[in-house]
Image 1 (cartoon, rainbow, N blue to C red):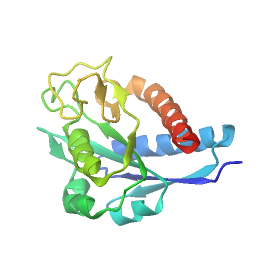
Image 2: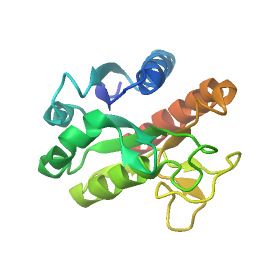
Image 3: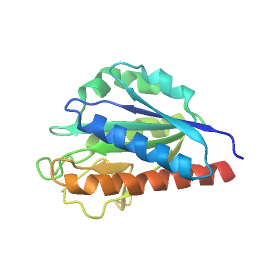
Length: 186
């Protein structure tokens, strides 16, 4: 039997869409943990009420962020942005998910996701959960990998593709669990 892992989901949400996605991710991951050979618990935190420093207590950390207007950060993330650089995440497994509006803000789709990724990559953590950019319509994004084949985390658009979100969450959570399993086996 493998050592139990702790997963913490930390999100900021203004209109509840990121909160709802976080809850769905929590439920999906917990169900997958119960079915598989990776044992653990998944806890959920709103960064408006919980300091980002608490995320350091988890083996696996998932951060949820939404992009606002013309590539701006969600307000709770904006108010805690400077705290990111102080986190001790070396050796931690970190995944990201973001919400955005690919049609209304096509030039800035998932920019906040990319900005968060750029901060976290400096902290020597193991980033997982990159997501294919197929099936989206946008012009530009800071949330893409350098080869532009993937988003740096799960990309959700509840404004224009709400009907796809549950399937995307389910597939991404399976991917995350598989990647955690691979890292634990290494």
